[in-house]
Structure formats: C-alpha cells, structure tokens
Image 1 (spheres, helix red, strand yellow):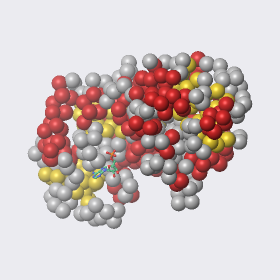
Image 2 (tube, rainbow, N blue to C red; image 1 turned 90 degrees about the horizontal axis):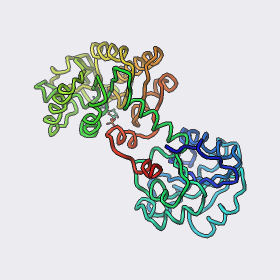
Image 3 (tube, rainbow, N blue to C red; image 1 turned 120 degrees about the horizontal axis):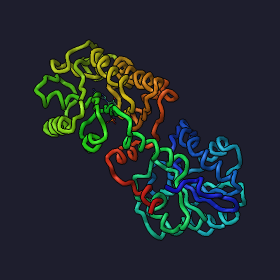
Length: 394
Ligand code: AMP
C-alpha cells in the first residue's frame, strides 16, 4: 500500500483528490468543516516537503455548472484551516486551469472548481481524467467518502500516473477497517442499528465470518421480531424481508456467531418527539404503539456484551435518536462503547447516522476511530473492492 511517506514531494506537484463536499447554509457559509480539517495533514506533509498542491473535489450534486455548488464558496474556509493563501481556478480543466497549476511554485496551493460541473466526472470519462491528470506529477487520493465510486477523479485518473499513493486520511481509514475485519483479538462484536434491514443485509452476511457477536438494534429489529412470530404493533417493518431475517439468524448460528436482539423497547403512540411512551416487551406491542428505542433490559444485556469485547464495530443508531425521548438507547450503547474503549478495547464507529449520534453525545474522542465515509465504509464491510482503492494499488 503506497502512502505519502513513500514519497518526497520536493519540487513535485501533487494532485490531490480531497473530499470537500461540506454542508453550506443559505449564505453559502461552511456549517461543518470536519472534512476540510481531515485533509490538512496530507496537504501539510506535501507543503513541508517543498512541493506544490493542486486540490480537486466535488461539492453537492450540481446539474451542470450551478453557481450555488461552486467551490469558490469554501475558498476562505480552506485558507483559514490551512493557514495560507489558496489560489482558485474557475474551471477544473482547460487551458487557464492548466496554466495556473503550471505556474504554481513550491509551497503554493491551488483549488480547482467543482469536478461535477462536468458530467464526465461521474461518468468516469477517460479524456476528462486525462485532462485532470495534467495538473500534477503525483496523484494522491485522500477522499474516502467517494472511494466506492469509479469516477474520473477517484479512480480512472490513476491510470495516467506512474506515481500515485493514498493520502493520510484514506490510509487511516483502510488501516482502521483492517483492524476490525482482520483482527487476531477476540471477541469481535458488531453493533448494527438503523432503520432498515434491507440496507444492511449484505453487510451482516459478509461480516458473519469476521465476528463473534452481533448486536442488532434500531428499526430493523422489528422485521426480525415479526419473522419470529412476535407482535410489533405499528413499528417499522419490511415484511418482504422476514424470510431473509430468519436466514440471517440461521447463518449466524451455523457460524457460531451469537446474535443479541432487544427483549424490550420504548414504545410510542405516534412517530413524534412528544409522543406518549412506556417500556414494553419487544414482541408484545399492540397498535397504535410502535417501538422507537431499545428498552432498559436490552441496554443492560448489550452493555454486558460490549464490556467483554476486544474489538467493536458500531454502525447505525439503536433508536430514533433525533427525538430526545427516544435517544436513550443510542446514548447508553455509545457510553458502553466509550467505556470499553477506555478499558482497552478497540472501537470503530462509522456510517452517517452513528457518526452524528457519536457527535451528539460527545463521544468523538472516546472511541478509537470514527470513519468519515458512510457508503464507502459499508461497501468495505461488504467485502467489496473499492474502485478508488484498487486504482492506487494497481
Ligand atoms: P440508517 O440510515 O439505516 O442507519 O437509519 C438511521 C435512521 O434510523 C435514523 O434516522 C433513526 O431515526 C432511524 N431509526 C432508528 N430506530 C428506529 C425505529 N425503531 N423506528 C424508526 N426509525 C428508526
């Protein structure tokens, strides 16, 4: 695996694919700069070596050149975080853009306009990738969030470089996932939650070979409970996946993976923050009640398993954590993961909503690693080879 430390960037121009797809408010101000900060170590290493940096990224989902998705909006934020002036090119390809990168001196940084202003980016167009490649001597991929896409700037472009490597962030993501998926330490426990079982089936099936315990929470439990003959009232369910749920439980049994489902939950009389609620056995829910969080007995059981684990992987909330009254399960499991980490376990949290939950409950510094790429992480857990990673390794 080639990383930044394999290269000295003195007098070299590095073309870095970063993930600056940050949220903007109505005044086009950056509301969460985590992703820009995350790219800083890679950029700093190259500048420190005496190299120059060309940054390329997408922002949002523009249809053609839409001003509101211009990377110009984030330029001042990038300058503030990197602590230096950053030049800007109003197009990511073309004569003017190439001229700007050609004239870049050691220590200087250039940010290119939104890659997705050209449809060829998402199409993975060869010619577009070739044009982009003219900006640098070494290609660095540091965008984990898009590593599962075979786009021009994330994968195709690598063919036009002799010298290419992973940036710090991407290398860190790969190493941390590897710690979980190929751990020699045991027991390994996966905690999966979230709304739907359908979106997690492939992940569950492929990690069964890597784990000892599987804790399931969130809305997806009710498909399992109903499949086992329980009454779930108005809880979220995917009836067409009941059979799949039973198959997963059987496969887990065959592979000696212990599955922990909740035994109780917090039920609500409507899907709302101010709903009436009480604790109920998870398989004895009657209408109009619906389960929106795991209950106290389940928390106790889950926390015990977590406490005794050496490796923890957490993806997806235990309940509707966006509503304070139904966030207790997610918070308690988060605390249990933090406690286990303090006592020496390794913990990886990933996937959009669990990251949001970890932040909400102030756990960011209390787990071993928080993954930045939701879809990319899930695909890696599914055992897929990500195009953005394969392109560097080729
Ligand atoms: P996912 O994107 O599949 O990880 O699902 C995350 C979403 O699942 C969050 O927005 C939660 O509010 C939601 N969720 C978790 N538990 C439940 C539940 N018991 N009923 C309905 N939605 C839930």
